[in-house]
Structure formats: structure tokens, C-alpha cells
Amino acid sequence: MTNAVDASRLTFRDVTSADEAVVKDLLEAAFPSDMEARLVHKLRHCGALVLEQVAVDDEGNVQGHVAYSRVTPAAIGRAQGLQVACLAPVSVWPQSQRTGIGSALIRASLEKLKKIGEDLVLVLGPPSYYPRFGFDPVLARKVQGPYAGDAFMALALTEAGRRDLPIEVAFATPFEEFE
Ligand SMILES: CC(C)(COP(=O)(O)OP(=O)(O)OC[C@H]1O[C@@H](n2cnc3c(N)ncnc32)[C@H](O)[C@@H]1OP(=O)(O)O)[C@@H](O)C(=O)NCCC(=O)NCCS
Image (tube, rainbow, N blue to C red; front, side):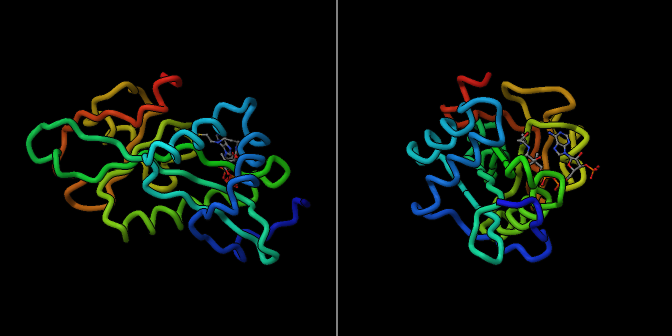
């Protein structure tokens, strides 16, 4: 694999079972341990994934991966009806990082999430990266759960996602080993 991938020519599609082996390799290459690969495996097999997409180049090679899992709102008033998802993890092959692939994949997958009716997306990650997609640590202060601080950010995809807060949330069970 070379680092000459043109991010503007990528296509974005849902993961199929045929992608699982390369996605595992990608996750193990992008992160220091196999924790994220195991997380994705567990999220898939406990039915917690809301959306899982890959960025694919002209030759059909997987260049990036992103997963969104279901977040369960606790019953506080109107927030109970919100569709909430968590972005984690996202990855690009080390030799192709910082060439726009991750950003293009995140933007495309957020569009898809909006289309399928998600109201609110949460992420825990670098405050220098996620605000460019609209993620906001101030909005996330209205989301109570195991995470807090500037690395915990929220993005409303609908009016309800911004309006029907505060909310208390629980993440999918496989995240417990990350807390
Ligand atoms: C994070 C990741 C998915 C971003 O994808 P990418 O294709 O490399 O990023 P893009 O080219 O779209 O965007 C580049 C920007 O992201 C920033 N960036 C990339 N990785 C970053 C990181 N780990 N922390 C903070 N900023 C990061 C770059 O500094 C650059 O910022 P700039 O535009 O202000 O110069 C990719 O770098 C990756 O797989 N990293 C290893 C795994 C990881 O850390 N995943 C995220 C966990 S929250």
C-alpha cells in the first residue's frame, strides 16, 4: 500500500463481512495495541453497531474505517426518545494518515447517520481534531455519563438532538473495559 491515496477520489460504503479481515489489520496497524480491533469485534457481535463504514480507493482497497455504536439514553423527559450514537474508533493506515482520508470518511459517515435518523453523536478524542466536524465540548456538558472534559464532545444532527438535553447516557457494554 502506498501513501499516494487521493482522498477526493475515495468512495464510502457500509462494511460487509468480506471487509472484516482487512478492517482488523487496519485497526491493529493504526492503534498501538489490538484493543480497538477487539472493541469493534465485540460491538459487531453484540449488535451494538449503528453504522460501520469504510473509505475505499479506486482499486477497491480499504483506506479507512469508522464505527458508530448505540448509546442508550436514560429516561429523563424528552431525551428518552433521542437516537444517540458514539463515534469510535476511526482509523487510517499509518502511512496514509494526515492526507484527508479520516476527515472525508467522518464527514461522509455523519451524513449517512443523519439520513438514518440519528439525533446526536458523541465522541471522546483530541479536542484539536473533532471540532472541525462540528463536535462541541460545550454541548457535551449536557450529556452525563462515564466521560467528561474537553475530550468529550457532542454533535447534534437534528433539532431534537440539540434541544432535548440534558441527557444521561450509557455506552455499549464493550466500552466498559476502556473506562
Ligand atoms: C485520527 C485519524 C483517523 C485521522 O485521519 P487522517 O486521515 O490521518 O486525518 P486527516 O488527514 O483527515 O486530518 C488531518 C488532521 O488531523 C489531525 N490529526 C490526525 N491524527 C490526530 C490525532 N491522533 N490527534 C490529533 N489530531 C490528529 C492532524 O493534525 C491534521 O490536523 P490539521 O488539519 O489541523 O493539520 C488517523 O490519523 C488515525 O488513524 N490515527 C491513529 C488512530 C487514532 O488515533 N484514531 C482516533 C482515535 S480518537
